[in-house]
Length: 377
Image (tube, rainbow, N blue to C red; front, top):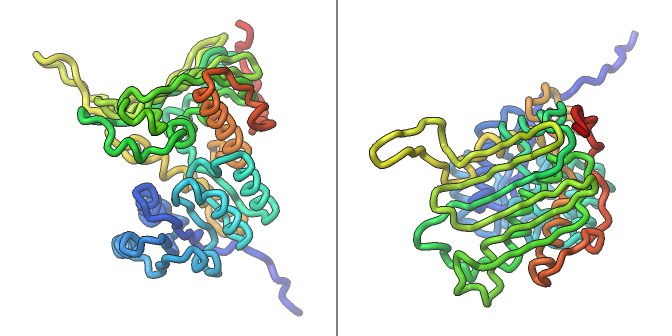
């Protein structure tokens, strides 16, 4: 008698290579190495060798390179984490997909819809996992707010709000002339646009109107700096959303969201570091969070844990999914919808006029509308 071969899942970690050893790349690398049990940091690549060597030494990684082709051709690498500058994102996604590597990419996935479409098409053709770094979905309070919306707590969404105020100092922005035009939309508010899209499930953004200026560093206005912005987004279900951003909040890092609807309201986010509050002769006070990697420490970890789960599932590796897998993972459609709003906002800020999102791209909803309770109340 001959044994029948019975396939079983292979018990092994997801082996991830980091592309880009800047500050966010370093934090992601630490998460993979120290906080995600079913993942391993296999290799690190960055054109700046000292940054790679320092990170590799700290995390015990033996494979390092200044050439991204080394990790793309490495058969021991299952997936790549792209934390390189924005201008390289789409090309890196395409190259990784063609090499058969699953991909997690920081936002945005491209500078234009055409770039992003090319990246998404390459991932689809290769059949690899493609996820994007919209970490607020994994923040405990934002995830709880979405669940409340799914459960009908707000009824039909009517008014939405999302804001990002980056921590600042009395001295203002450091080297504001180095901030590229459009950064506030493409790299900051794009988080808010994804959050608004996600908290209004099934609806599509149809019209955008943005007002923006250099109020923090007016001396850099002539160079194209925009450091303060308010964006109104009209959705296909009639809901009206407002996103706002500023680069210099003296009191800390402030990220909040709110959804008001026919049956109630949900909120998420606070700049407070803890619930501890002091009551003294100086007034009422509390400590605030100063860095995004502190405010969203666990969210950054959970988004990568979810990515590792998805890669493990695609590749047949053993292991139970983490709790993060309950969140709707941001994929290509989500990234495309958020980028379309960001590009429309940038165009609106330049012209002073509302912009139809259809002028930027034809969009599809990333998910079906939830069956809301309390609608019409």
